[in-house]
Image (tube, rainbow, N blue to C red; front, side, top):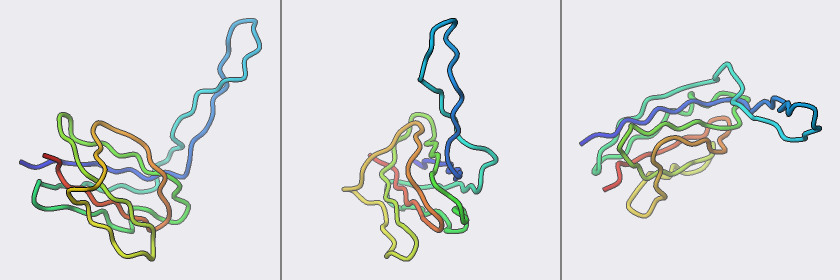
Length: 115
């Protein structure tokens, strides 16, 4: 089988103040700051990892939004720019669904479909 993983890089989050009637509130709702800075589509199997391009994380990138194909799980590794590429393997952490992770300029993510 094959698992598809979409990644979207962005520069940070913005905060919207939460209005709570007549009561003073200090909580906020946070959202991804658009426009997106970069994107990549990865396709992996249980026997072959795929890795994003460094160009998907241009200057100013602070985080990545990862969307794993519904019903699939992938193992992943993050590699900062200038470091030896870490390829996802059997002992890498698992992701399912979607999440946001710290990411930087030139970083790469490697994914491998989890059994």
